[in-house]
Amino acid sequence: ETGVTQSPTHLIKTRGQQVTLRCSSQSGHNTVSWYQQALGQGPQFIFQYYREEENGRGNFPPRFSGLQFPNYSSELNVNALELDDSALYLCASSLMPGGEQYFGPGTRLTVT
Amino acid sequence: EDKVVQSPLSLVVHEGDTVTLNCSYEVTNFRSLLWYKQEKKAPTFLFMLTSSGIEKKSGRLSSILDKKELSSILNITATQTGDSAIYLCAVDLGLNYGGSQGNLIFGKGTKLSVKP
Image 1 (cartoon, each protein chain N blue to C red):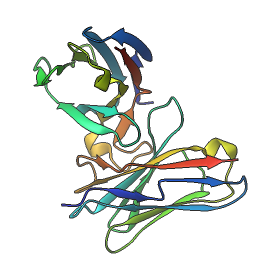
Image 2 (image 1 turned 180 degrees about the horizontal axis):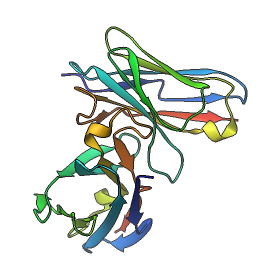
Image 3 (image 1 turned 120 degrees about the horizontal axis):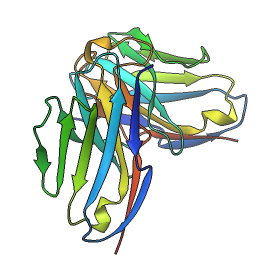
């Protein structure tokens, strides 16, 4: 059984640029949730995808968008990057919405 | 607004000490409370608590939930340097998934540093 994987591990972007982060869910899981963890904070919910549809969204602006593919992998896109977007981005997959979540290793994004 | 509060935010102890980490919550719907250990990146699962008063144990770690007091504690006995990490508490809102906060609400975490 393959766990949750994320890519890239880390990256550095400039303010105003766009970034795409990727997540492969655990085998058999059809639900992916994305979280932003700023330094010194707990993870904050961005949104969740279930069977390729957005299934809930946290208090993040529209420049945070996502996709889920037929194989249930997912992307998080952030446009017009701001310095405050610097954080660890975690994805978590589950068998179904509301199910136990398994976290990936995260992507460390630094915006300069 | 649903919230989870952890205390202390940071703690420095010496090897062999016993520590107690606290988590309190105010949520609209409660299914379970979870504890995670985060060493570098991915939070790793420690415990899931659903019933009051039933202690869960794993080696030197134990945790208990008090639904009357809306709180939980995580105890670590005979601490080791490998216990140094951020300990996250989260409440699973269960059927409230899809709402504005998702189904997992996290506290800010307690950063534990164990010195040799």
